[in-house]
Figure 1: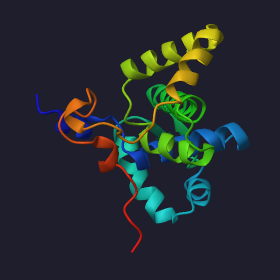
Figure 2: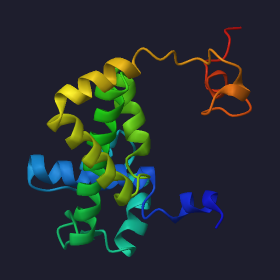
Figure 3: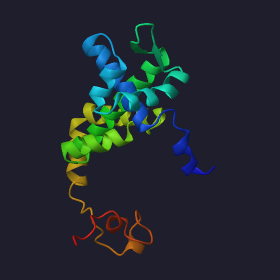
Figure 4: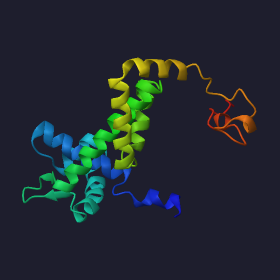
Length: 177
C-alpha cells in the first residue's frame, strides 16, 4: 500500500468540513441555514459557497429544500459530529498534555480534524480517559515527560527515536533572515 495515497481517500476536504460545520452551527443558532448565511459565517462569497456545496449535495451530505434552506443529511450530521469530536480531542491532547499554546493547539487541531481516522480518534479518547481517570499516574508521567529536552542531546545514531538524523532539528523554526 502506498500510504501517501490515503490522504486523498478522505471522505471530505478541509474546506468541505468547514462548510458542513457552518451549516450545522447556523441551524443550531438560528434554526435554519442558507447559502448567504454560510458565506457570511465563513467570510467568503455566496458564489464560492454555492460551488463548494454542489459536491456535498451530490454526495448526499447536504439537502436543500424548496425554500433554499440547507440541512445536513443523517450521514452529513454524523460526519460533522465526528469532525467536531476529533477537533476537541486533538486540541486537548496538544494543549493539555503536550503543552502547546492554546491558540496554536486550536489551529493545529483545525488542520487535522477531518484527517484523523475514527480508529485513531477512539484510541485518543481512550488515552485521554486514562489520563483523566488516573490523575496521579498522569501527573507523574507528564512531570517526567516535560523534563525531556525536545532537542536532541545525543548523537542521532544513538537516539532510538531519530535513528540516523536528529528529527528535532528538522522541525525547528527556520533561522531568521
